[in-house]
Image (tube, rainbow, N blue to C red; front, side):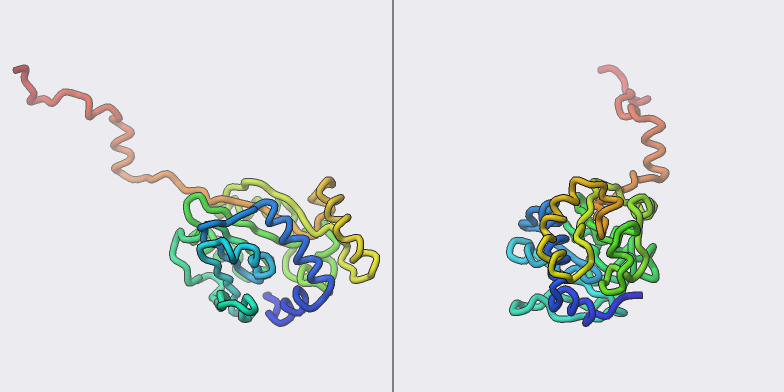
Length: 246
């Protein structure tokens, strides 16, 4: 079940804890994807807190928000790029996305398999997708005061297995959000320190969210023509039966 867009907006843009979470995840994504010059960048779910750094350099940025969640205009003060979309039927042509970010989309989906097929469809050759989900072993998935306490949290192996089953290849994985999910002054002031320390710890145990970067696996063409070529790969070099010496 998707959260309401107003609740997500209030958390990320109107609460100190939400702004801290936004900064921690966005900075780590920016480390993994430092630029998107000339690329098409898409986000699904509520990925807009992570997309702003790419607005000035990407060829195109589009924020897809699922219908059960609702949509809001974004970014503020600039032409709107947010679109209300069916969860498994996106208004994007096949193979046109170079970078895809899924945040608050997979773990709350009631049709995750169909959603992953749509992610695979829109991703282009050489494209990468980043799936960001609550960590089952982390503290944030146990708190109902944040969006990470809703939906199905994952372990790293569960997420990678599900992505592999839908023809994605894991390129690398990471974790973020090591700061405890508390608005108390001490935790807020030391948030940056926790993020730095957390990256040297076991991400499967410490991080509030798991981040898995994938590319799409493309199957080799199959069919009668391909089988015939494999059967006689050097046939074109054989002399013709009618050929006679001059």
